[in-house]
Image (cartoon, rainbow, N blue to C red; front, side):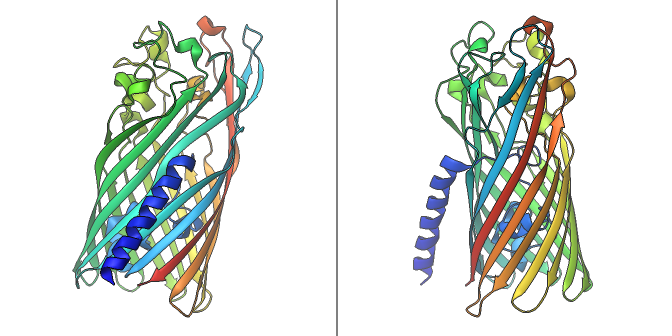
Length: 420
């Protein structure tokens, strides 16, 4: 029976990966997902001190010690609406540019947890860590003469272990086995002597990279009402995108930034819990993400060690959610998520490709438990429309003016779980 379960899990994991490679696109807390797992998505992305399913290892691997033997499989329909506007430019390119030629995406997830002994739990989760997609319906003349856009996905496979140090305390460690895929198109204006590696900027097709990082966490219960948690993920060191070594700083390097956070969950009544997380994502520590476009106009070629990036600042995400157990079968969820703005007004030019400007999300969710120990969960997330107006963001060498960015998002998730 154990062998059958292992084989089934491996098949499911491979299926999730193959689907995810073709379909993941995300942009919520910067380009990281706002929450991992359909249950977490329904409570504003909270998860560090609120273990609910086997996907908890994505937020805090120590949480595996508290969810029991289970298998979770889910998928989220994600629909971002993104737009760029160019104004006050000296050339005949002013106007709005629609980046939604592809606008519907499916983001799969799978989590498995097994209690190995009284103190040890082992699990694995496969999920989309984040990503970004823009698919402009026309060329953006500032960038090139063909339809512009990028396609970035990040998939994590995370084996994890959690130990109960006592009846109220646990620690966990996970291994982030990461896969990235990237494509850029419509950047012909930069595919020449502006790049350290001419011909390696645009329309090269998809390229892949692989890497590894670590994730550690702690979770502690204090009395009958308060749970605290802490989580830290190292920077995930990735192999380089060779096809795009003339685009990304450090000859195609695109590491996944470190992140860390704290969480709290308070059980106000036996049926009602309120929880919150604060998470910090260190985008500025990855040169291809954090370097300013000003480096380009200071004669630093794209792809060089100090080549321009997207100019992203670090993001702090504030997440709060509530759960109410109506009865033995039904649990309801709601939440709110606010992230600080990664894109400064002077950095909007390159972010035509990555207009991840949403900041505020409202979420709803529910779970129905069946008599056979299985359960069905749903979530809905709306990221409110937000706009970042450029401030002299187009250099005079490109005709001056500004790029304004706008985005909103909707997503609907569904997951099914079995207690094993």
